[in-house]
Image (cartoon, rainbow, N blue to C red; front, side):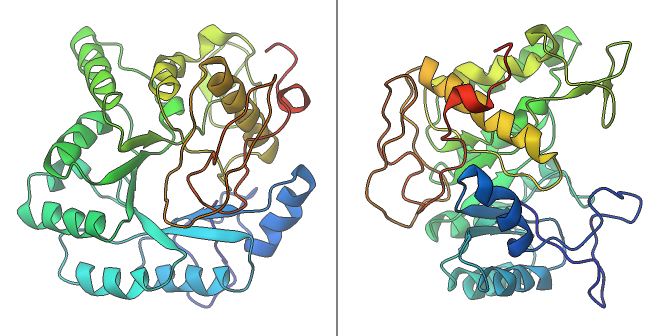
Length: 310
């Protein structure tokens, strides 16, 4: 979930005024109003600003509402001030990691060979924190290299279900090989978001409008489901997506996990709670989110939230 306030004197780097559907103040209280009717009682904030000071702004906002159970900030590994801010932010138990991605003009592939970048990721891992990233098909090979060099680092790949696999045969083969390799690595997780997509009247993908196709063949992201069937997945929570679509994604996640008889464990771990049982067709799961208290996003009765065609 993204938190931001365009009404601040300094404004925001995202969203921009042209994004009229989301260009408004969105704080924990606003999320609570949307999520509470669905029984959701906790959320993790995801960065949406490259401004270092916004890490602290988010933590201040989170401190005012207990629905926030964690935050993922934005720092630049390899930069001189990385360790200073990591040390300061890590003192707050809500701070659970950073996102470094193909966002804000950054290129992950250009940073991976740099010794100072890897050194700072090792510091992140030593602190027990998580690296989130996003960036399309090429990102998978980046994550392979990062986890080769820092195998103790927990990595969450954001929005992978929305990734369109390459069409060129060699690139497609590299994509699938990287995916298979990451499937063997228990420290790599996937956030199930951007599953449902939109198409115009000609069946072409569009960012807005159109319809949500019901044909499973429209979703090449099904390639990754074997990756989740073996192990843990992270759950969706994106302010930039239509809330109803997020609910459907949560239901779909539950159905897939149950069908694969997978044990769902957590990400951004570090807090403890008693095991939680959640039922779906008689299946039970212990401590489904690795200790994050009250973060039950996605654990709804499937028949209530899954589309009828499923």
